Length: 383
DNA sequence: CGAACCGGGTTCTGCCATCAGA
DNA sequence: TCTGATGGCAGAACCCGGTTCG
Image 1 (cartoon, protein in one colour):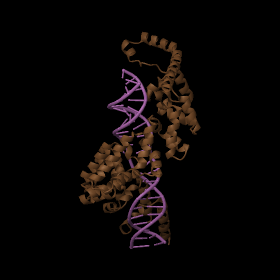
Image 2: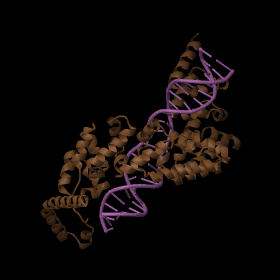
Image 3: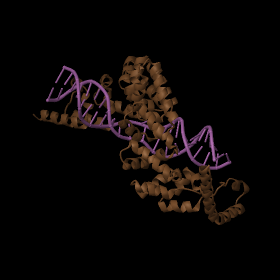
Image 4: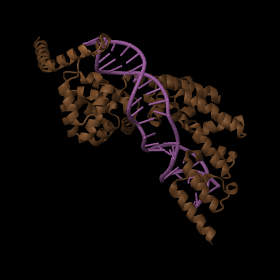
């Protein structure tokens, strides 16, 4: 009973504060409304927002260096709120080591941040710190993607998410990578994350896999972005891969938790289009159907490469004296940038390197190893 | 010993649509 | 009816080096 009374007192207190605050605004607002009523047609008056913008809030934001135009464009409702916490947020973030410039940028890009209470912020920060080692790491993520931290006001859901991810067998290093690279995962509703995990487990079971839980864990830890994709996208990509590659169950299962795990992120149309154009291109280059299938299985990442980029790369290799057969055998050379490949081909050509006898593995090596190899070849040719 | 195999590291937000509840 | 919360989308590679093999 006492508690209920307490809440009532608090409520009425906050309401009276709100009233005080809006009273101060009324004279100005009334004036501007009258003016616009006189100057504007009735229809445009009816389009006026119900609540005016909070002038003292605007002043505060401008003082903070916030881009008010951006705020108005993104979350105009925030500017009309009577009670906001921009000062508390600033103090809080400053205490965590964020510069005024970073704070202004955060609020400009995700205005709703100023509606979070200090208690909420402290609790959420603590939960993130359970996963990340330092405040600086969190600040850098907020600077990169303020929405990930501020979009949800549900700290309990965040807590459940962390518990859920741990229950999948993901270790603290996995969680760290997940929160750093795909912070949105943690503001998903835990139900949404569960749906994706269930989808993955179902796919595994359908394909005759023996350990669906481990399959889901493997897919997530090898593709940190999977949980911020829709189940529709992932499901469709899996279905399309199965039919277009003509794979049996165990082949598909191996692909999905192996090299193919990344291409599930691609949009359905992009993956489909890339597959079709690539297949045509390879056929034109004289590749057989079974060769193409083998290529996709051994190097599915080829579907990630934009058609234009891939064409350039292939042409560059073929022009450099490498055969399609060699590329099919060592597709990993396609991993390297066109610029890198071109440079290496030039250097090797200068030294009279013969791909026919030596193969093309030299193109698939780190900068260091390649340089060492070139040095050795140069010494040999000087003798 | 060098070459080949192989897996792993990094990377990924900002906007719009929808829906439920105030 | 407005707004906050949430879901979903487009965008689209490159590189390194430990370990094993011959």
